[in-house]
Image (cartoon, rainbow, N blue to C red; front, side):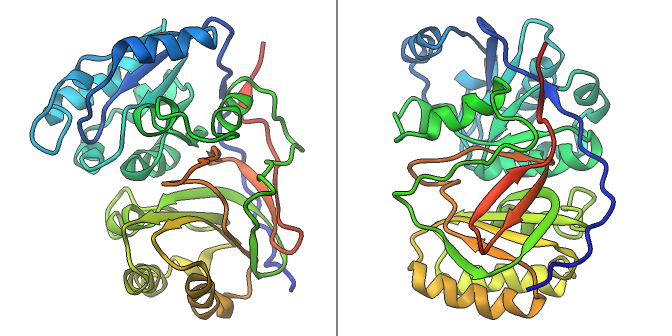
Length: 316
């Protein structure tokens, strides 16, 4: 299959690498969860880092981690704090989209640094890419992944990217124990964007929707039966999103039979005549691999490889 012509895309801004003995902030832009502070400090210390927990992490307002004001203030404060070298989200759940129209994207751009999370955090990944233009990381949450001791290479996938051990030309490795599925062969170059499929669909027709031109779309989801995945992909098709893509990388779709999912993907994405690779272990799964969103990448669906085409962090 011949890939569509590559658009001339400027690279998203790389962010400063996580330094040795760096400080990692914890914020909760979405739902609440109890944090074992001693365990979190021990995890960070064992890897040479310090932890800075922002106030909203310890709050609970129903299904939200504190009020909108608190969660927004923590987001802004963590980016603006000169002591903080990277930001990881406590958990997903729900609540992140409520913040979008109040986020100071100029502040985030001026203080760009690694920002890590997935699931509901997709809303911030997409908005930051659109309005602040720097690379973010679809990667493990503190509670659900790092403190829950997910299988390798969950941790190394994240830290290798943040420390700058993977640079332009590096292959983003995928564990051989989890075979990938080539839904449609071909090679595509583009900007890797996306995250949670439900959240991508939920932001359509808003100022915070994903910009699909020249994009290799990454999607994942959880607790959505096959017919709902069908409905979400159909929504993207009818909104004109799918027609703009250069390729698709499908992550974990927890709870859906892989064979049935592959058939649906062929039905929905085959007519686009773009490369589609499925089964990437990223999302609500174990292991949970980190992906650099906003980065220029090369997807070879037939060869089942994903290669960085830009540096995603700046090393000293």
